[in-house]
Image (cartoon, rainbow, N blue to C red; front, top):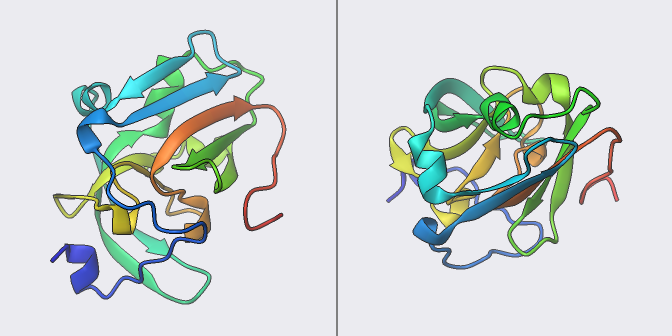
Length: 164
């Protein structure tokens, strides 16, 4: 049983559970206002400097879970694609491209905002947003998009799934 399940973390997918996803084939497209758009593979992400963030994921529905989230900082991803100085927001899409959400650049660049693939040393399962999810402890959990497939660097705020 996954540690998040042991902590009684709810399994919640607004757009419907994606089913089994293949970690080793996972890719995340990063595009928009950047010099070097790139599609990151699972192997690419694993080769980058991993950060562990001891922090809490908190839902507007009144649950929260604290632990060690592991992944790569979003700021490292932005630096890798040479983000434009015009970037003000990052927009994320989950698997299936139904769920999207946006966060401000200043929060995306915070040290604990990650593209996370693990919790307390265990890979994230699809139930909890694996293979790779956004982990942003500075905002409500709905801004920590699950099973991320695309990140767009933009100069405008785009209302996401819940705001629409």
